[in-house]
Length: 234
Length: 208
Image 1 (cartoon, rainbow over the protein chains, first blue to last red):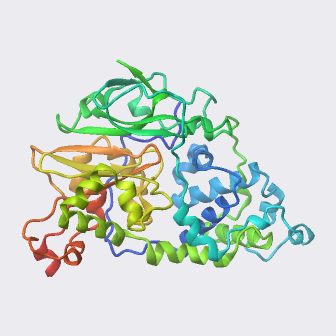
Image 2 (image 1 turned 180 degrees about the horizontal axis):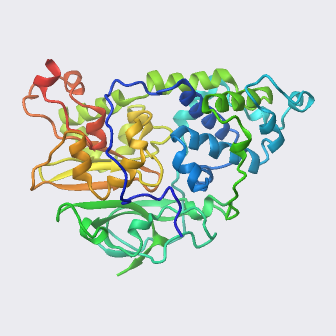
């Protein structure tokens, strides 16, 4: 049902270790490179943000757990590059530290090379972003204050084991609408090439006591952003 | 997609992560798919140009200018776009205000969603399993690990960033900051105070 990334509410993790505000943005040089390569490859236009999140989520649990943050990114990127046929498994296998190549294969012009992000276009690409709001003909069903319940079972209803943004800890929980965000791309569909299927998106509040068997404080709440198809009227 | 497999593509790359990145960069560069100069530009942007100072300027202005604050809380996107803070991972912003009655705190339990145009790249702890797992279930214990203790009559509202909406916490303005300029106020706004794992810095602490 769930995947290893869906860890909200999990027990067993140790303390959080704060870091000073002045700490380097990238603890290691390769972290910076990993982030930049991932963003630059995204600019090739062969996948969307939902597809890329899912590529990281479906790493084997053992890999996901042992990998540091940017290792997860790299592993997800390798998956996408091969699955979207940007690179072949053979390409990856031949890529050591750059000293060993496949010669002719590597020298051939790549059909996507014309789309490579240029330094001069980076600022504009980052500033442009990728908004997720879209017009939709799905009617807005809920208003602020309305009670709702997260559907049960959770999970992606279009693709078994597919991408979804309803965390397991909220499945079946009762809450209430606090904001209407408009209509946004549905990740459960977009991650799998099934179209953007935009629908209403809401901020939904839950009492801590409706999520946890031992809430810290009776007045505490958790708010999640949830799509209309994740919710049912109460 | 449902076809999970053990022989993942990443296993074809060198096991050491630094070598792994290097191998991938070399390969992609040779194929003309990435431009190393563009990578340098991306890194320079998030290392030196886009970071928590942006968010601090927004918070300081909100403390200083009631009309700005009202507009920011009502509909942040146009206000932030006017300031040049629209962009990747900040396309849909909501600003949530801390009050004596309610403290807000932001997490992304499913990955590491974070408002890049205002805060830059998230710190390591924000991306850690411990924070992602615990912030929704025991925010007060997590806050204690940051040295923050809230009054018993303050409720905590944790925002789990599960969509493309990004949240910025507007911390409470510290006592003793009356009469300070916007620039002086910005120096009181820590990154953690805008995530909700910290409070604004007291003027006497900032001065010392």
